[in-house]
Image (cartoon, rainbow, N blue to C red; front, side, top):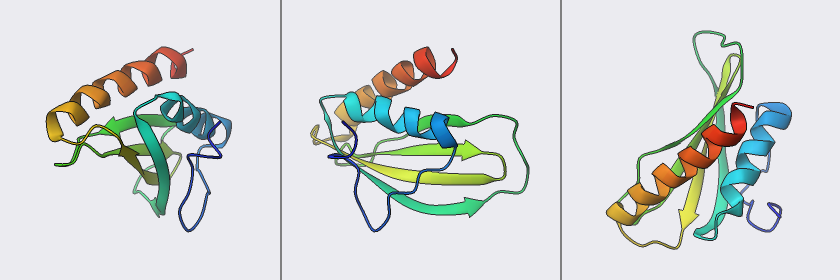
Length: 105
């Protein structure tokens, strides 16, 4: 299901199974058109588990998914069909709720 929505110059997702699971959850939403992985960076500290959360909307309603795992972090752009900031913020809350329900199990 995510392969048709995942694209960009590379398709590497950090966080192993948990990171891929987060992307799959986000990709299932009918208002998510495309997910584009971005640069993987090194952060200054190591965390114990993989964390995924959707960050604030831009003016067009597009979002960013932040995945943090160990000493690495990755942002993925989420292209949506919503079209404006307020609808993007509503979608952000929905996606974070979906992630929290599944990722905490």
